[in-house]
Length: 376
Image (cartoon, rainbow, N blue to C red; front, side):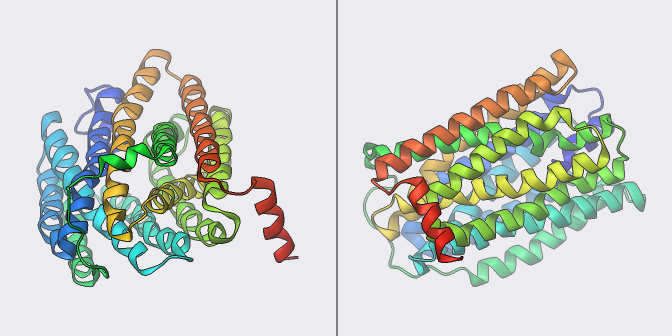
């Protein structure tokens, strides 16, 4: 993310890339695993569970703005920010499928695309404030906190549960008796482990290849802009072609792009890579959510299914970037990172094929051909 490259040059310049990446990894872990609590809470108590974590989320950004030491950032940005974001994300993702069935993929894709909008705006904001206008780190981050306060307030007022609360056990361990659900969870773990490397290290790589620091900060915005379309457009297609089919294509394309990553050395090439990778990785993010939700027989259990499934994805975010950082420190290059991450992403694609087979759905080629015939 943006902070990885900035911390390496400023507050945490004495730390290794692997150590710094633990901040984002811890945050990512709690964002995903926080869904394990946020999802079931929403299923049981509705939208009112959003307010406490939304407040803590804004507080965590303020605490990050006054952080100066490594452990400060771990606690404020990693732990506090991650838990609060995870507990707000799951209810938002669980509310939308309650209103849609046939067009569920498109609706959830549009919902997940909201994080891409933030990913477009925030790196540009921070890049301009820190690299262009000379604003201090503390005040630049506090501006972000005020923006988040306004947006989260509107979100908490607008999100409503359509169905009555779900009673019974807090979690649903019986879901793991469904092999299709297990295959989707495994696919999510592998793909998230694989494709998060460029999210953390693409700006670092761009600067190493001679790109200006300001332009490198825009690379993530380009990636997230493409991710916006990658979450919305394939979501619409998935309702016709098939959710698993769309996710499989996105995983294969992302794996190929990761393998090609170290071969791209020009500014134009890096920008094109960011756009393509953003599109297909965005499809993966929304596709995982949709496939997890589709495994829930009861719509009132969707939050719990998503929360349990994303928890393992949180483990992938926790260990993936530090492994990448260790490889970068050891080999001073990105080839080893691309080989590992690309292979794991491809393995995730194979798990999608298994989930598709276990679902009893039709053949991939048949679905694609029917889609093409319908639009010719």
